[in-house]
Length: 387
Image 1 (tube, one colour):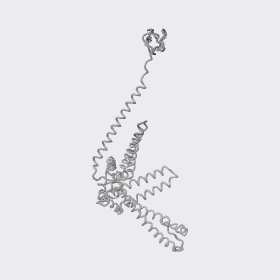
Image 2 (cartoon, one colour):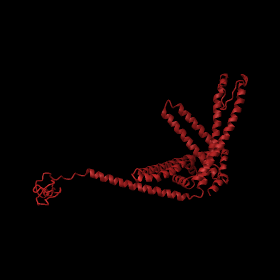
Image 3 (cartoon, helix red, strand yellow):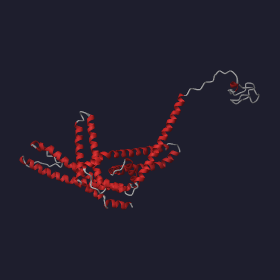
Image 4 (tube, one colour):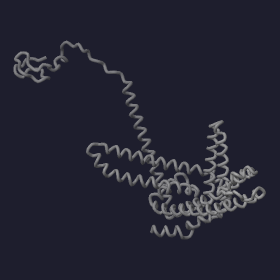
């Protein structure tokens, strides 16, 4: 069953190989490129004002990060449209959708992080039980391997399932609780499938990036060679010229009037390489969308969301009950602290019924010297009153 799903996920209809077609989406390429370029410019502005105002620099950094976050989600929405077999929506509509729904992704990741934190606390409490003498080493024998397996799977699921599939769930229109329940359901039932498919997505994105790098490296070398020959044609031709693979002119030629071409070369080359980096990014986003749709296929997402909702409701009820009990206990202690002290009975009581019940402190009868038990009122031998 799993092997069939993997084969159909790689070569079937709507397979992962369709992720490569994402590079043909001109609007998505333009949006992602504009996002990276704008964020880079704002980050450069932040670095330029960092010495004058650290607060302003931090503000620019946050703006750049927010721009990348919402821009990537907008492109992801367009890729999800393609994964569902629909034409990708226009750039403006994708940006509006990202601005309206991207906060759900942050909340989903925060909820999942809280669940991980609760799991770590539960493991710590169980390990604390292992400190009990006698029972501790025996319990640790079984708890240690269990903790290794469970925590290892949970940590491995973060980069392979939770992060790659949380965003596509939101792009597909899931709510906050729906996104959390879907990620949990996929991690519980189809972890291995998602891991293998995401490995294939990463491999395809890496291959696309490698091909683009080879193309740009060879093109940069040739273009730099020709451009240097043309620009230096009036000052010695190609003598002593060593082309640079980074697209910059040789340092020796800058003194001959080439300094004016340095900034245009850097700007033009930066745009080209930034555009090249967007291509493997698009392949990865499109592949993650396809893996998400493949992973949730056949799952009862409504039942999973209802089950999670019931667990959350039960946890809230238990938390409220615990809060009420804690408040009642605190109120009882507060009442005891403010209660008046009981009246003290007079200490100097000469005789009477109280004095008759004071136990004997001597260990021998003063009349017959018979040993008596401390606490006796009369001597067991002669009947002498001891107190």
